[in-house]
Image (cartoon, rainbow, N blue to C red; front, side):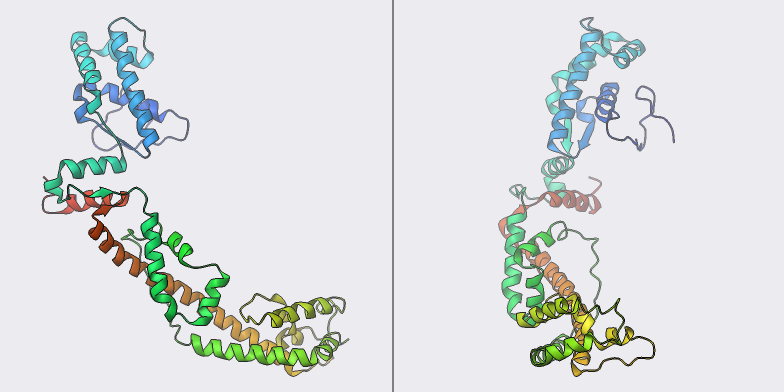
Length: 359
């Protein structure tokens, strides 16, 4: 890697200059612009990211040209770079002419944001690019994204399994969240949507889980006191089943069952499962036995399977929403004759790759 020299580094071909924050990138660009003044402002393109950066560059470059002109006219000293340029001029009168011309024609300088440059290309080469003259540039895509999200939700919501709807509601996923999900994805041609595992078993698994939940809730309501006593059995290790904590676990489980929502998060369910209890039995002792423990174990296992299926179904819903929104977005933009910032980049790219790209 070479050290970049503003005054002497060649600019032929492509050059990548690596610079961190605060190293004088704007100063360097302005200096390079001044150095190449013989090309004329119409032949130099400066592209940056934001409107603010564009305005700053425009002002800094204009000031550099003015400083160099004043130094050459003897009305200012200029900095080391400007003095170095002046010393190298083979003909100072020609230098004066070029600087005056650059300053007088600076309003024609091509200093743009990336999107602004693409818009100018499409407008100036409308026939070559096939761009429409009266297409409106919409700077905020959120209203349209919101409308697409609501359209999809309204059409799809009646078809969504009730269990999945409850799952989505717990995660606050609705039209607003879908709108946020759309941002930055609808125009991504490189975004690959991969196939997902099958979720056709979701209704059957949900039905089985619902039955286990109701059976466990009913048995808990009838026999929770005896169940609590079994958990306090001396045959269980105290570091796993501390009698002082059992009332707290029981209260949490009662709240879970009373809520009537099997998908509600409840970590304590595992402690009432036969698997956890069996792993906590002291050596030489027998595990306490109760049908409730088997019910809790089955409920927890099926809940795990159901949650996995719901997660996949949620992702599939997002993928379906993307397909829907992509198609509708194209239709809406054509109907309303509008385009967004990303369409400017895509429009230039498409035009360059077309049969008239060279033109």
